[in-house]
Amino acid sequence: METSYSYLLDLALILLSTKALGLLTKRFNMPQVVGALLAGLILGPALLGVITETTFIKRTAEIGVIVLMFTAGMETDVEELKKSGKASFIIALLGVIVPLVGGYFVAVIFNKPGMIESDAGCTIFLQNVFIGVILTATSVSITVETLKEMGKLKTHSGNAILGAAIIDDILGIVALTIITSMADASVKIGMVLLNVLLFFLVAAAAGWIFYKFYMWWSSRAEYGMHRHVIVVFVFCLLMSFAAEEFFGVADITGAFIAGLIISITQKTRYLAARFEVLSYLYLSPVFFASIGLKVVLPEMNGTIVAFAVALTVAAVVTKVVGCGLGAKLCRYKNYQCVRIGAGMISRGEVALIVASKGAAVGLLGSAFLGPVVIVVVITTIITPILLKMAFKWNAPNLPMLEKGGFAVGYEELADIRSGKISSDKK
Image (tube, rainbow, N blue to C red; front, side, top):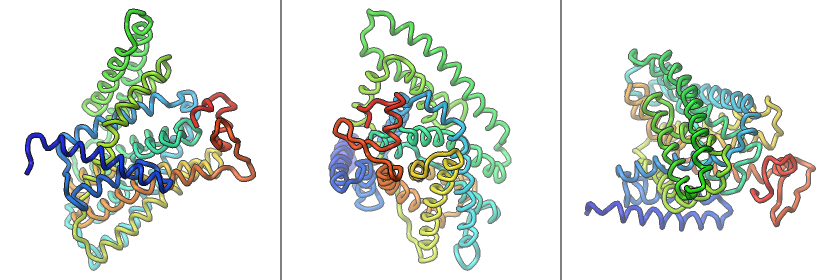
């Protein structure tokens, strides 16, 4: 029986199960985030049905991913991110084009009479293109949490993944808008592109103003450091709100940019440590569990199962190939290309949001929702696993260096020697 205090029980179950399964997956040398994702699947409608996604869980999860991306921004090396800017764009561009083409051709094979009957309200061509658009999505939050857990967020590969994922979000918005405008005349692609451009201009101006204010304010000795946490968090929330509300850009993009602004101050380590506690204790478990709680597996016949398998394989392969090829063109080493490709696989809640928007305007038939959910579940779970495996692969014929009790790979050693990261970040 549901009561007004049921959210307390839901929260207790989520925190307990995510931590327990996180420790279990860690014993099998898998990232703990995998356990948190499994906890949501097990407790949610897909299996036990003990917990459903309530408004409380949904809102808490949204704050959780905002804080996660905010801390990722704070821990990002801005100079290194600038250097990887061109490479990140190429990686993101190919990471959108290749999955779009791959998803389209998989849909062409299955979306026809005698295979899967679609009830979407547009042409088969647009439906097939839209399935490709779903595969362009990237859920960087899973990768960020995994990289933070492994201590690899500040590596060359980590910076490239972060930069590419942010650009991928923008390109995904453009692709979604273009295909939606073909099915809905009220959507204007020109206005969307203008809003994206305006957002980055406004974000740059707001960031400069806040930086100047913060440096002046923080220099006043009478203010204690505990107040800094509140001030920067307010800035993060305002940037996230403005991104979504006024420009139609993902709120996590606003949060990440806010984090980048804070990263160039002198208080980054203190602030990041405070948000890490909040995220670890409360917000991150709810966010990752909420992804599993969204999953509802419908009834599927053999053809739909085959389509789900083919779409999942395409989702994994096209991201690895597309992003890996982009990284190779930018002269990254082979092992770095694999890391970057693996880090971009997860579709997470982003693909579910894209799919739901497409279904609302008649771009996706109901029979295809099940396979999309399966793609989300599998790519979300395997991304941390593949990413950890990829980071175990170092450049051939280059020895590992023992530093501070940790085995440091070639990429991380190069960063340490260049001063980009310190040895305690391993």
